[in-house]
Length: 120
Image 1 (cartoon, rainbow, N blue to C red):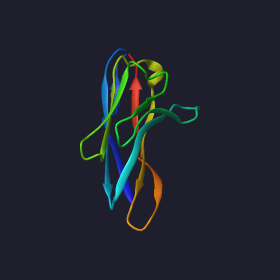
Image 2: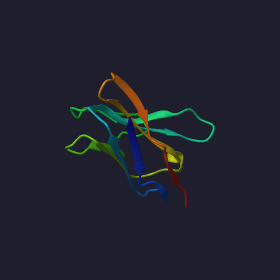
Image 3: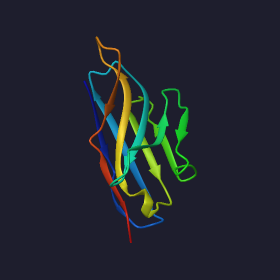
């Protein structure tokens, strides 16, 4: 099994910054694409940003120019640097990863989520 643990959420004023982290642990054989999704109250969960094992990134239009996704060299931790935050960025942010464990093919995993609130 793979566990994804997010940290770094909180309350920030409009225009401020936050850095989210997501660490993967468990009997991991390999981790492929990792990403961040968010879900605001009453809305569907949506992709914010994703990064492949090779470093290719993909951003939602709402995140382009303000958010940066990155991974550590061990490829087991993913970060989301969020700048110029807006009230509409308020949501629960979830880490997501495609990974393999011994004896199984590629499976998709989710973290428990971390709350980001942008408010004055």
